[in-house]
Image 1 (cartoon, helix red, strand yellow):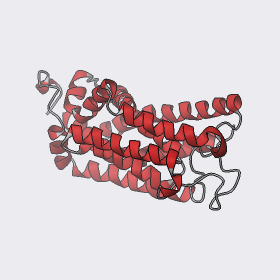
Image 2: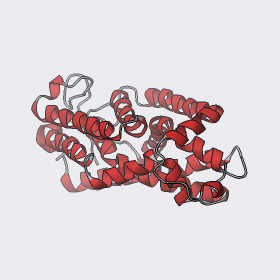
Image 3: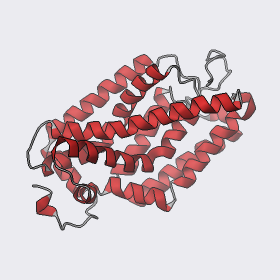
Length: 276
């Protein structure tokens, strides 16, 4: 199967073509899941005892960049695997490297988000000082971030971006580029749509504790839930409900949220909050 043979295929084919490709490309799927598993193990070891709760200190740029790239591989590879498998089936060359190059482009897009997040945290720290401290505005900003993320789930922009993720055949046919350079471009473009779909969920991760393996797993689960379950409406409304409940609890009763590290509590060091 090639891109040209499906030139006029509808872009609303949904997830069925990707799942069909995944069943044929089981080795590729296993590789991506294996890389994700290694990423989870490495991240769990690297971030041990580093969860400072909402607005956790991001450390140095070099350290954070390395952790972020591995985090994105761990969190995103399982949900993007069917799209990568579909891309692999559609390439004319059948090159075993092509899907990995596509995945690299996808990961590069998410890497740019990490650099932007680090820059925002650094500049925000310079401007606001200790405004994000839990006993100042940190708790309220974190709760507000979750509520805004819940609202974003129901917006037309979110729906359009999620549509690209849930109809990968239409995306691939509409943005096809040949060769390895084309694979990087297509992977990066798919990553950009994924960022549009998931940026609010990533912001929620920072609001809950970006160095928390538990919350990292929760957000990764929500991303996979949105992209892969059959019902699109259930995906968006379900995720919005979860984010809204977490936001309200964070504002009203943060002690009731399981696995949430409260900054300044007995379970963390006093300097673990985000700082410039």
